[in-house]
Amino acid sequence: MSWSQAELVAAAYGVVFVFVLVYVAIIAAKLVRLQRETAELLELARGRKPAASERVPSLEAHEEA
Amino acid sequence: MGLAIVLALIVAPEDADQGISQRIFYIHVPIALTAYFCFGLGAWKALLLLWRGDERYDLESYVAIHQGTIFGALTLITGSIWARASWDVWWTWSSNQLVLFLVLFLFYCAYFMLRFSLEDGPRRARSSAVYALFGVVLIPVSFLAIRLAEDFIHPTVFTREGPQMTGTMFVTFCVVWAAVTLLAYVLYRVELAGKRLDADLRELREALG
Image 1 (cartoon, helix red, strand yellow):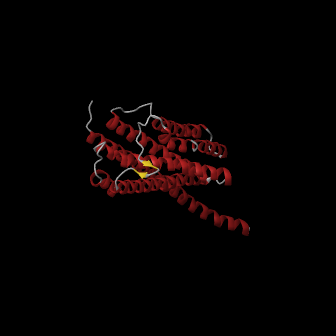
Image 2: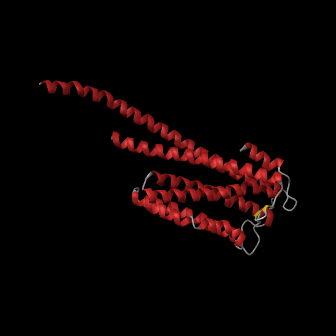
């Protein structure tokens, strides 16, 4: 297959552009995953917060007794 | 980066000898220099890890080498395209510069094989650091091979007499180099921040049970 010089120049710059684009897409996908995991951990932490506050009165009652 | 591409593809004058294919030079050489810089940075961070024993240098060294490998792959691809345009072949084994860069690239590809074959921890960090330091020896060899080569296939643009190009060409080259270095730095910071956040979240998940 014969390639013209202009096509080869376009291919060289295009390859770099595609690489950077793919890299940014991978990073973006990772950020979305991290955002989801952060939300999950926040839910988990919020779920534990009431449980911890519930334990405090019972502890106080135990100490009084 | 936009300005750099405009300068490289439109503003810079066409080379009398190579014609339009010489424009690949403006992207190929800065990417190659950035790859060398990333590998060097990875080795420097590896040295700091071995010297100071701070674990954060392990991740910094890994990310720098990862960046270097990406830019190394781009160097080989753009170089191969330029070879097709200038010499009518995609690859030639007779050019020391090409072969030595391929050796350097494969050496750092093996870094990942070593790293991921070991358990996460200080042993992996130290082994990876030692390997990264060995690789740094190949950088000056690969860089100087173009001058030591006997075949003279690969062009030598920067000589002791200075850059062998016009002022506009040299300015274009410097602008593209600055843009590529900035791009590499931004990608390095973003990847590093992502990896640190990932590690922190994993630790937090374990702490929360």
